[in-house]
Image (cartoon, rainbow, N blue to C red; front, side, top):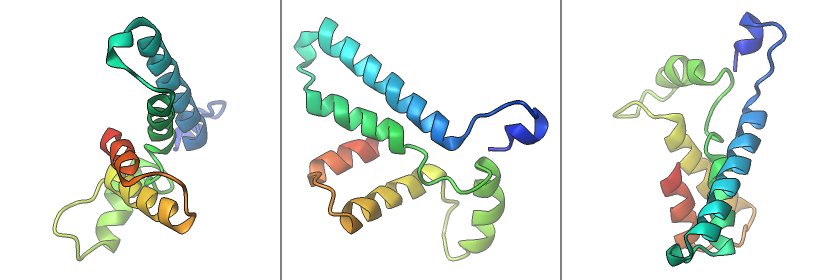
Amino acid sequence: GSCQFVYLGATHSRFEHSIGVMHLAGKAMKKLKLHQPELKITDRDVTLVMLAGLLHDIGHGPFSHMFDSGFIPRVVKHAEEEKSHEEFSVYMIDFLVKENKIPLTAEEISFIQSLI
């Protein structure tokens, strides 16, 4: 992001944000699993929600939303509608899973992407 340019002592990177979202998603899922057993939340469900938290902003370019609204529309001229960083995150997950042969089922990938 760009907060450090306005508030010189501030730090809030995309990495820090994503790690925090993953952590909080995991805590929330574990609480639900413990206190609402009727939901039948599995450890795999917890892991998939945490992965979605970690990867939810992977489609962001540099300088965050400024990149989305300033750079992408100038470069992706063939797009019929404006693309969001969430859509790019979904594309990136497809690419990363395939390219790195990550052992996720199509259903698990779709679940993660639906949370983004």
